[in-house]
Image (cartoon, rainbow, N blue to C red):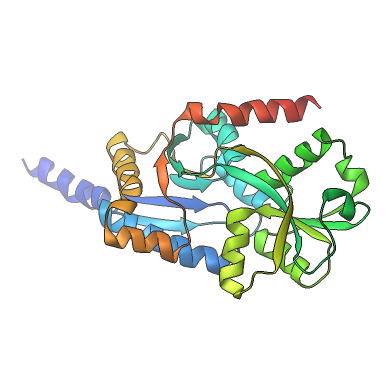
Length: 268
């Protein structure tokens, strides 16, 4: 009996101190990311009654390396990264944004540019090269007869906000981004400076995932919490303050279109 009591003395604190790492891909400036997803982290912590550490990296490449190594227990990732992370680590989809992702090419509203050919031979800013919208845009432009890397000078940016700020500062002729990022930027800067001159076809959007090492009951509880944000006042406030879309249940088969896109891209 004494041995059993001693065993419990050591094991109970370990159970109580179970904590999880939550990694978010760096699609916005780090201060804004921590503000938005800090609220998400706090909500999930309260629901699980467990410690969750919010993590990210300054650059996409660093984040993707850590994701593919399986560093994160939970993560919010872009669709192209999901396919690889699922293959390498078995990450399990939980919930995805309820609208599909579309890459857009935007210019200043006051400019004379109205179509893609108007910005040929000019500098175009973009989200990082690894970003889904960057790859979607290049593939789409090639399909429409442009030679993206020859017809334009692409200036890759640290994140969507940097890309759009380059455009505002007239350092580039256009910016490759996503509609949600543009709307977030407009709200933060209290501006409506942009117009869209080109957009791609869609792919399933960013999603929450869990590493398979996370117990199923914990994964299920996190999934239920995310899907219920629209059902109660604090959840709706969380989405509104974070300028986040509603989320719906995500399944692996939802991302078969992404796999097809990546195969076509790699075959070129």
